[in-house]
Picture (cartoon, protein in one colour):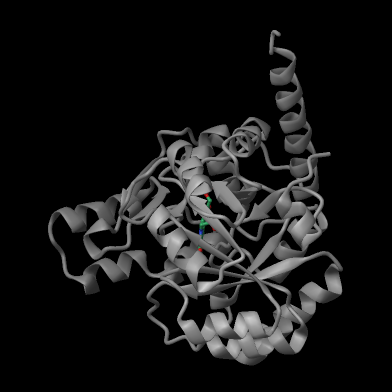
Length: 324
Ligand SMILES: Cc1cc2nc3c(=O)[nH]c(=O)nc-3n(C[C@H](O)[C@H](O)[C@H](O)COP(=O)(O)O)c2cc1C
C-alpha cells in the first residue's frame, strides 16, 4: 500500500485522481473511479441546468460512499456558465472536494469553497499559476505537463521538469500528471515529489468509461506518435488524437481561418457525437502521449489494482538496487 498526503487528506485508497473529462466524467464513471479507490471528478460543465447537476450529484452519492470531487470549469466557454449555481448545489449536497481548472478562480468563488469547508484543488500547467492559487488559498495543486491529453497551455513544460519545479516552489501537496498510464509512471511521479498522480487518457480505455467502443479500440491501437497540438492560434492549445477532424483544424489554422470556421470543427457537440456513435473522424478528442502505453480495456478497479501493484514493485525494485 502506498500512503501519501493525498490519500490521507482525502481518505482515498490509491494516490490516483481521475482527470476531469468533458462529456466523459459523468456520474456513473465518477462513481466507478471513486469505488475503485481513486478520486473521481464530475465535470460540472456537462450539466446545463441546476436540476440536471443535482441529479448527477445525487446519483454519485447513491452509487458510492467514497470521496469524489466536482470540477468547476474556468476555461472560456461558449455557453454562459454561472459557477455559483454549481457551488450552491455542492454546498447543499455536502460535496467536500472541488477542483478548478482553467484560469484562476475568482476571489468570491474561492471564499465560498473555504466557507463551505471544501478541499480546493486547482489544476494548472506552470509554476507561476501554482504559486498564484496557493496564495489565494488552494489546498493542493495539480500540474500536468506538455505530454497530457487536453489543454496544454502556452508554457510547454514537460511533466518530468514541471512536477519537481512545482513541488519545490509551493508548500501545498502537489498532484502530478501528463503522460502517466502505468505503474512505472506513478512511481516516477511520486519520486518527483508529488503526493499523487492524475490520469485522463489511460482511463478512457476502461470498461466503465462512457465512450463508444470504437474509440476505446482506436486508443488501444494508437502509439505515442498519434497525438498532435491544435488550437494554438486561438490561445487554447490542446493535445488531441490525430484524426480527420484534428488534421482539418490544423489546416484551417495554417490557412488563418476565422474562429467561426474553426468552431464548426472543434465544437464540443462533434466530440459528443463521436463518443456516442463511434464515428471516429467527426470530432476532436483530447488525448495524451500516454496513449502509446495503453494496451487494453480493463475495468477501472482492475486497472488501478494492477498499476498500483506495478508502482509498488517498481519502487521496491529500485530500493533493492541501492548498494551501500
Ligand atoms: C478526453 C479528455 C477530455 C478532457 N477534458 C477536460 C476538461 O473538460 N477539463 C479539464 O480540466 N481537463 C480536461 N482534460 C484533462 C484531464 O483532466 C487530465 O488533466 C489529463 O488528461 C491528464 O493527462 P493524461 O491525459 O496524459 O493522463 C481532458 C482530458 C481528456 C483526455
